[in-house]
Length: 103
Length: 148
Image (cartoon, rainbow over all chains, first blue to last red; front, side, top):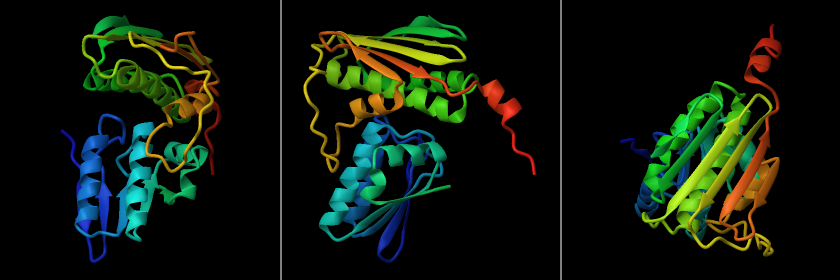
């Protein structure tokens, strides 16, 4: 069973899913993201190094995380996304909500 | 899972249990990557995921007593996906009010963005998706390799 890696620092956290961010895996990642925000992280980075697929449930989770962070003056970033996922972010206009960057 | 697959077509019927979908997606990914470019493989898998997840989660409300059927055909030029479920369907003709800050509701948008053609039956419990492929993987690897 894959798991999410969490690295915390002074004001933030880097959350690295072990695999795809989809309807199947979203509950585990949601739990990890809720945990780091509840723990006080305000600059949350999701590292997509291991992510080959992102679906609408995964996008919804990222938007919900962005909304939660915005309420506490926090910030979400997605880094190291594949070219295909960057295209998806672009088409869904996700980059208007929070920072996304590619590999 | 019941059904059969070969290099060019797949037909599967399975109960409306979300966890039962992932092995199918994994198999489909390997299959697509052997035929299509990375961008087309991503698009095809995303279309299948959205159509099937929608059928299981929204169409059948994850009721394991209900079944979802899926047919996929692929050749060098296009992928055809047909997904139907035993649920009550939805009104695909109703205007969609897109809330970009909402945490859900993007699945149908993705079908239309990535599919070359998307159709539903009258009841709204069957979706038919055509995805035209940009180019064959073999053409891509043989003809588009950049050299310094």
